[in-house]
Length: 189
Image (cartoon, rainbow, N blue to C red; front, side):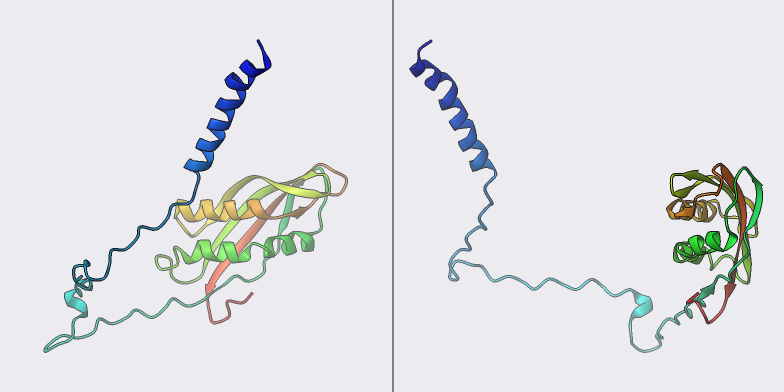
């Protein structure tokens, strides 16, 4: 095969393919608007109809708004260490869990209307050392006053994001951690 044949059979199809790719990936130009004389008058879009419960008029009233739910506080709790092959400082565990308290608060806020008053959930999980950090493993709900499986799953999922301290002396540590949810005015904890 001569050099000219290679040019025709390889280079020309390659260049054609490149040209096609560039042409097909070009940004689309906005459609040109017709001249103002040829544009038919347009009607303004109609606003959606107002539901009857929100109309004003004779004999109608505004629907009453429910007061917002009170903020939820989560008092700090004491983690309890159970079976283990290593040790971890309870204060380090508490600090690690505090990083996901906003997520846990949101899990409860989603079901708070159905569960008024103080509520509690106790979770048991294992912290397993992997290098310099400990990782959440085998989480379960051991006691709860909230009977909503989605909320309980949300509590456990929130702990997946926690960077726990690695157990000293290696191994693993099983922790039981109670959460209490109380309606109150101080939700900043």
